[in-house]
Length: 113
Image (tube, rainbow, N blue to C red; front, side, top):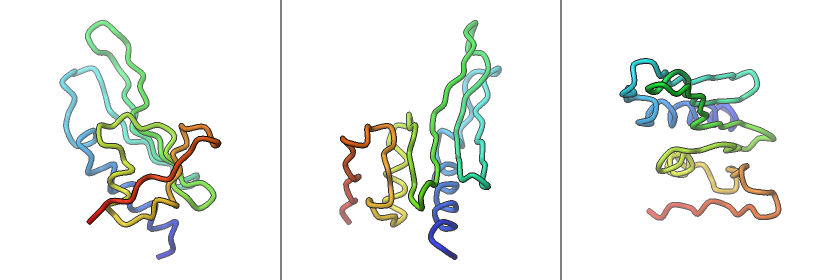
């Protein structure tokens, strides 16, 4: 398995094991969707529907594989998908925190054993 295939697998694992994916929402008219476009290497958790009388459209997580690295464009999860990816052994240098301006980006801190 090549590196990008492994990244795809680990991104999907991190999302599907996340409580944001696994646990149901308390609102019957609000759906949480896991959208996967493996052709373009784009993975997204998205909420859409109604919460009380308010229409909700919310991107919780948007992760892409771009230029051979994992790009985190949006992450509103509590611990952050970066935590899982580092735990799975992906080097910090392979993760781009894309919501941060390119001039200000730092590498994620490696997890200590």
